[in-house]
Image (tube, rainbow, N blue to C red; front, top):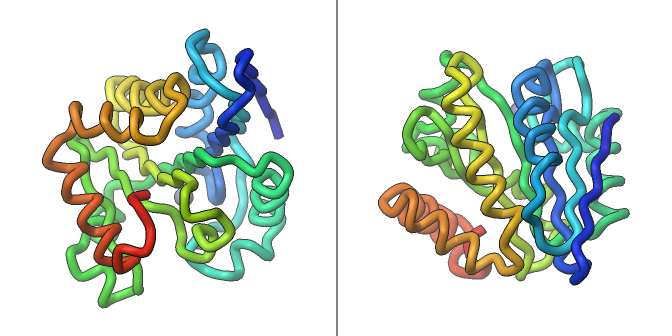
Length: 204
Ligand SMILES: [Zn+2]
């Protein structure tokens, strides 16, 4: 497992960017996170893991079982070791999963809110509730789903979002940047988050 560490003079906040959590999605997430690791504009301490596992049996990160798998245990170790307050999880999905991931009935169906399409099939949402409970209220935890059938243009757009998180020191600055870029979509994602966590947590 490759790991990059970028540390600025302030050393805080600690940010963890991970990709390739299961299956073969690392094929799509690794190039994006490899590019992120080459960025020169960053604040705090950033840990970047382009791909936790190259190829594994697909176990959904929403299930407890994932956190008992080899790759899930690796992920938990990273979180325990670095205690990030910015946490970005990068996944890749196939075209056939789009409707399931964005289904407005997703919460009734499987107990978690749908992802919001930022445009171009890039999906944004919170992280698995099982994992969110390991972070503190003030931590900033985001999942991005990359459409695996799309072009380099989409990868570049995902990289821009991650660069925003890498360069800013405060979550509000990142949220501001996201709202400027995707006003309607971020409003929707924030609404879904607030409804799900009944206003007990700030998005995300
Ligand atoms: Zn995934």
